[in-house]
Image 1: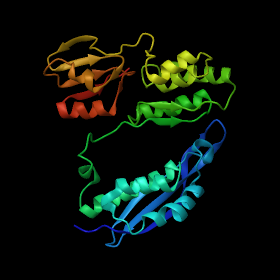
Image 2: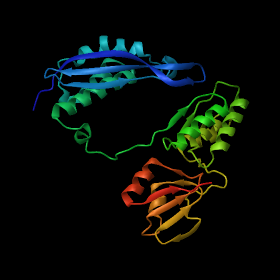
Image 3: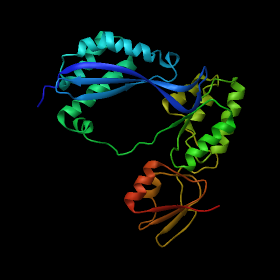
Image 4: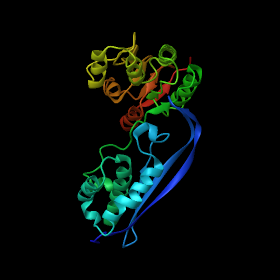
Length: 292
């Protein structure tokens, strides 16, 4: 086994153009800066990490430029010459060296773990106990644009099967206008997307601390009016076919289908989560969307 001694830590700032301008409550950006962190060993292994803060220091207190300086001048000197076989200890060293700066430290730690796995000739997940899943659903961040623009973007993601969960930015308009905008988006997407993030931000504008606390700790439950929390077939199963005309298809829903189901017909407003699509494939179930 190689000693995996760190020989150098280098950082590079990248300015990446966005697909479309993204509007926050305080600013609009059309590019996002990223900090790439490279941890190199004496044997020539290179691990890659990334540090990023959306839109600059207003969001989390760190800036890309500040993160680069923090790593180059304060963190790297304490890590060069150390062994990657002790990443956890090196992370504690970073914590003792610098208070806060979590995004900068995360980029370095990510690169160290990547280099550690490569030094062992193994995927990193094998060093950390094995994979838990093959895919993860990703929430798409919508901007603070007018409702029509937000709805069109969300619909395009839903129709493409790319995303089922959305986060909506607020705070760029007066509270009453923001609430009306979010309500319009929620009404249009009801039954097609995860609206918990929408509801959290709308209700956070209320002056009731108890309600906000209930949302934060998960005791406040959200349910779409008229929507079923567990979609069931709306017509009797026929042979190896089943039909669901509303709601969201999850892994649990698929497991509750009649035994032997090989074909599932869904309505035009039904959403299918990415993990449910994977489960359907493993179960040999073909999902077909019915025409309007």
